Image (cartoon, rainbow, N blue to C red; front, side, top):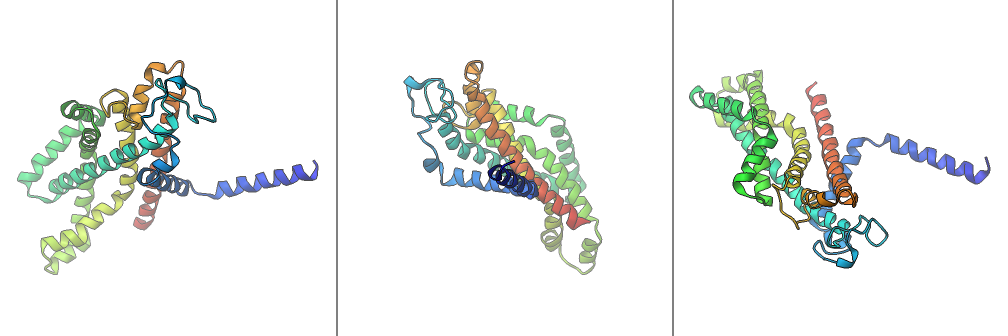
Length: 287
């Protein structure tokens, strides 16, 4: 092996060693930060064209140096549409997660901490809602509210809420019966102080990991609803809507499904890795 080849081989080995030492959670956090920046401030700087600019002379053009991700059936640049769609997809994921967590906190604490006459019916309601799959509940609310970003946020948020409510209830019951809460009661602290200083923070802290995981799941579910034609309607650049609009040409223009699909998968994986990091940290603190 000559000297230049040896140097290249050694550099590649060092690069692989460096990459192997980078935790997946760090990579995921980096991807999440980039996505948030793209959604918040950068579409106009990163996109090479408008999300709605039509060029009938470039219909269904494959990926090239001119159109990195190819074009759709009316010549719109797919790369630019994915960049612009980052804002809609993240907004739906974060909004649905926030709504489901808010509902879950309300129902979970009511089921765990209120008198039996109120906690009992709340628990029965949670049992009924948990019997339905998340996607089925989401489909129901989308059908009632009509296709839009707001309806997707509401539908996915309400569909996910029963699961979070059940987890919050279990955490709250465990904290309520803990020794430090009993000590606070013995010292004469009122219920409001005990809830705000002990029950709420100690019930919510283990669920921080689920917040990051839930954002990725919400994006996937919202994209699935849009793919079925029940979410954001075309010509929106939301990623699920891009999948839906490309279904008719999937056999002749593979990039219309593959490119938005990759964006959805990588985003979900990034949030999942961040969630697992917080989960590992919370388990380490617990043990």
